[in-house]
Amino acid sequence: MTGVRQKKHARTEAAILRAAASLITRKGFENTSVEDIADRAEVGVGTVYNYFGSKNALLLALMQRDTEDLLKGGEAVLAKPPKKPETALTELFWIYAHGFLGRYDRKLLREVFAAAFHQPEELGRELTRMDFQLMSQVGRLIEKFQRDGILKKSLPLQQAEMVLYGAFAIAVIMYLEYAEMPMESVREQMGSSIELI
Image (tube, one colour):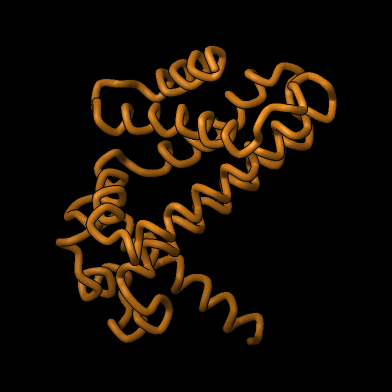
């Protein structure tokens, strides 16, 4: 692909993703059609299908793009973590929470979770795979503290990842459920849960 074609491809893809995010937020996942997305992005329906294949694939592309951004942010914590494990983990989870919750409104994220539960085979598994990508960074951070002698080497890594990620997930769910909960409360909730764990 030439440079001009690559730029056009990237612009079209970005326009489709923006249109999908906007419409799904306003109308809900189930009530947003590919035709609606194409109209908003000012492209043909066939173009949307050429880029993404289906509405589900489009939603997954949106979430995967965001997961990649979160992983990049997490690498900065892994490269130079704070000295205390609970501080480092809170910082890592804050990157995830702020990067994800700060990008979309609560309604869109509720729609994403609802779609995953309604379509566990198609969407749920892929969204869970993205969670596992984030969990693997948590595991790498724990391993670093184990190597440095700050955490016990006997600490079961996979269980620790799951428990800590579960604390993060609960804070996110509470934020999505309670409209009056400010974003900063997510950080406080995660921090206190991680310290307790």
